[in-house]
Length: 85
Ligand SMILES: [Zn+2]
Image (tube, rainbow, N blue to C red; front, side, top):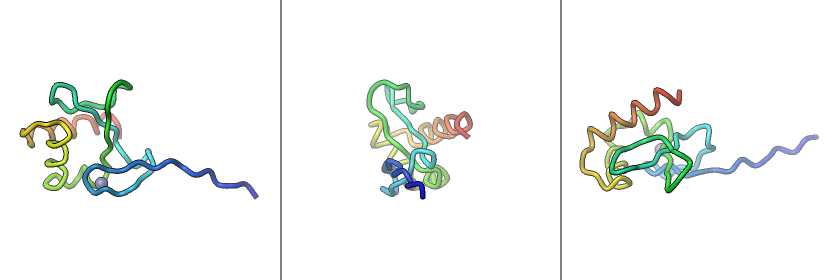
């Protein structure tokens, strides 16, 4: 019987749940703008469930980006996930 490979898990910054990478969107902040991960620099993850929970997730994005522009961050997040999904 084949052994199942253990998939590495990452933590969602909003709910702190552990997920495999396919359940997460990898994000990054550049100049306080939310962008998809560019393979350089620091990144963080948000799970797909939290993406739909704007009221909860916006403040964590604000913290990660050191930005107070919650609405702007969430609209940037939505644009990123259109590309990902
Ligand atoms: Zn989450």
